[in-house]
Amino acid sequence: MKLEKLLYHQLRLGRREARRVLAEGGVTVDGKTATDPLLRVDEFSLVEHEGRVLQGKQRRFLMVHKPAGHVSSVGHHQHPTVLDLLPEDLREGMHYAGRLDLTSTGLMIVTNDGKWSRRLTEPERDVPKVYRVATARDIGADVLERFAAGIYFAYEDITTLPAELEILGPREARLTLHEGKYHQVKRMFHAVGNRVTALHRERIGPIELDIAEGRWRDLSDAEVEWVAAG
Image 1: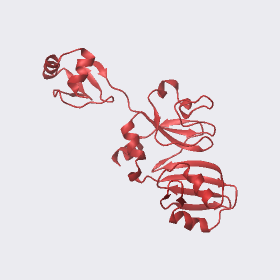
Image 2: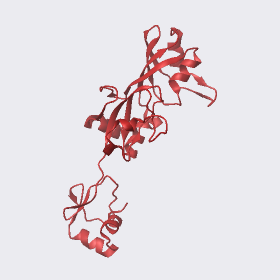
Image 3: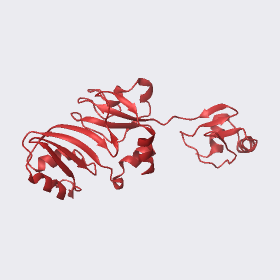
Image 4: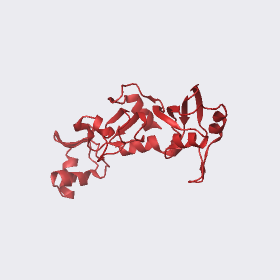
């Protein structure tokens, strides 16, 4: 939105009056005097007129430790949502930067900044996502090579990108993906004759889960900037 348009909506000023107010130096954007009527502002731009705040929504970037049984949706008629883990005053306008299914647990990122979340989830970004996986059957040594080569999904007629598998025990492994296909981890193990019994996301890029189940925290400035700089 152009700054003069915002002044029209907030102060009911016509174009000429808005430009006069700007020329007089009474308007600031993010703490700096703004005189250009064509300056682009968004919902997060702090716009003030003679000390009065006209708009300035705070950007929020949160890590949430999702428990099993919570859904990655804004609202649900049957199950609690991940947003329900947040204080009520933080939920409005928030959305998920990537999801986990009902039974999966671990790291989720929640924000109200759509541009930022797209930077995190866009496929060309190649953000590694690390999962701890438990399986119903022993994981064969050949699975490492098969995951590294990519698994073919006939329904979409695609082959997954190479994935790194670290075997931690007979039925436990750490898997690193570089994409986010629908139910990808479970489908990959199904393709090699196994079944996932527990799935936990530990990390997205450099953002590592470090809080207890059901808890949340603000992302650090460094974590936020890593996504924005991408």
